Length: 142
Image 1 (cartoon, rainbow, N blue to C red):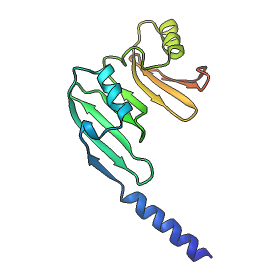
Image 2 (cartoon, rainbow, N blue to C red; image 1 turned 45 degrees about the vertical axis):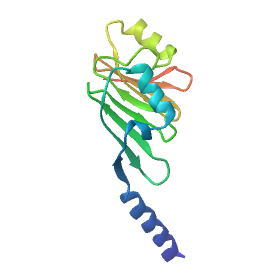
Image 3 (cartoon, helix red, strand yellow; image 1 turned 120 degrees about the vertical axis):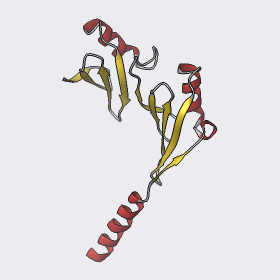
């Protein structure tokens, strides 16, 4: 029994290690990812895009010529965005954007990440804020 379990674990690890980053064109991105790019960065060209093929649910990473980096889930939903000049309006939930505007009016959101049960934002002032699924501040890190 231990040998079978060990073999299964070994196979799983070897499959995970063979995951590749495959270059993709914008045409190969899921429709929601393409739409997000067209709405929020209509005039920006893609520097590169690749699919992180982990054999289960691939993610897509896109880097624009202006330095913006985006990560999309397998279905095209936004997972993470990094934009040094500020994440576009409407990308971050209004509750989080209002919180930042109220408590840190001179700061911009330069990174936004969507987790399973939380949201994280990084601000230009160096603070990192974590919100729960109800958009309540859960953690503050500097």
